[in-house]
Length: 244
Image 1 (tube, one colour):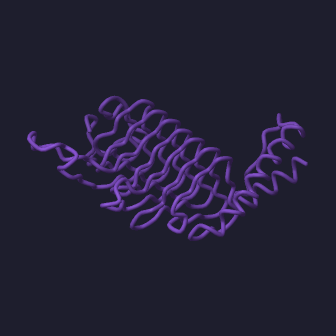
Image 2 (cartoon, rainbow, N blue to C red):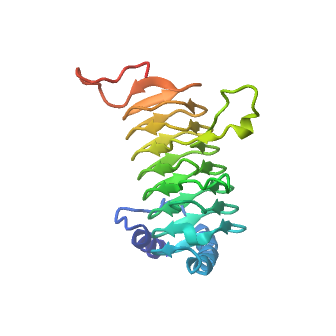
Image 3 (cartoon, rainbow, N blue to C red):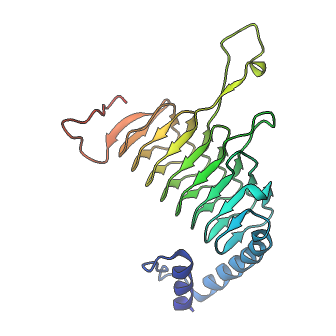
């Protein structure tokens, strides 16, 4: 059975190197296949309601999808239990091949009906951990092979508050958007604010609040997040500084 399951997963993921842990028993595999089978059947029900689904879709229990015609899905997308997606936005919500969305995660592409959000795009082989929040007001773009821990939030919008004599809720908002490039690891309980670009290969330590751009291959942490070290040696002509 293990060989059959490995072959099936390789086909779905299009990853010929994928292998199962030798410690998995036949009983373990039966339980996993049972849960995935029900998720596949629920996905079949949703596939005809979204804008597009290019392959197998696995949907957990109590998943909510609003404005499904704005949701675009790649192959082998997984929505775990209690995920909530509101895809209403200018450009919609796009989840690439092999994207997984963890339990109780919310993707809210629009915050105000008076101002539709830009949308959310997540590249192939990336994941959102459990209890994530992704707002799409100013647009969130996440690249490929991005690892995201639990309780991470993306906020691509800010409230204007310059005039103390006018209620903040009446002063409007600004939206610049958030971009996370490929091969990034974002630790648990990280908050990323509007206007931030996280460079390729960067690592963000757990609990950080990211208020400005993160250079490629930097390891950052803290509140606000600052560069702790580099994953690649800096070149002499590099403009990166350790206090970025």
